[in-house]
Amino acid sequence: MFGGVLYAILLALINFSLQTEYSKIKDVAIPTLAAILEAGLDGIENKLEVPEPVNQNIYEMNREEREAVGIQDLPSTLYTALKAMRENKSIKNALGNHIYNQFINSKSIEWDYYRTQVSEWEREQYIKQY
Image 1: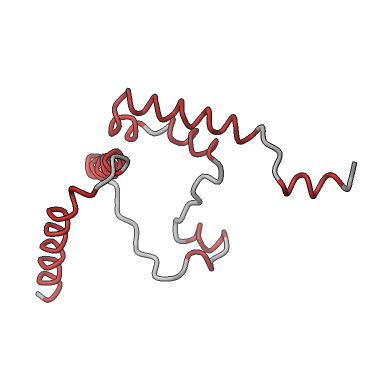
Image 2: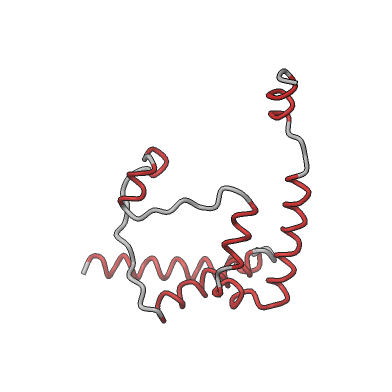
C-alpha cells in the first residue's frame, strides 16, 4: 500500500515536471530520450530480466566485484563507444537513419582528430626518453 502511494506521487511529480520543463528541453535531449525509450521497449519485447539493484558505490568496487554483480564497464574511448553503437540496432531504430549516420560520421571525424593529437602527458613522458 505504502509503495503504491509513493509510486503515484512519483508519477504525479514526473508528469508535473514534464509539463513544466518540456519547453526547456534542449534539442540534444530528444534523441537521448528516444534512445532510452527504445532500449526500454527492446527489453520488454525481448523479455529481458531487470537485474537486482546494486546498493553500493560501484566506483569503489574492483573489476571482479563489479563483474560478480553483472556490471559491465562502459566504453573507455570514443572509438570503442562508436564501435558498440554500430553493433546496437536499438540505437539506430531510435534515432532514425539520418540522425544516426550524421552522429556516427561526426563522432568518427572527432575521433580521428583526437587520436592524431600529441597530448601533454605524451610529451612529458617521452621527451625525456628520446
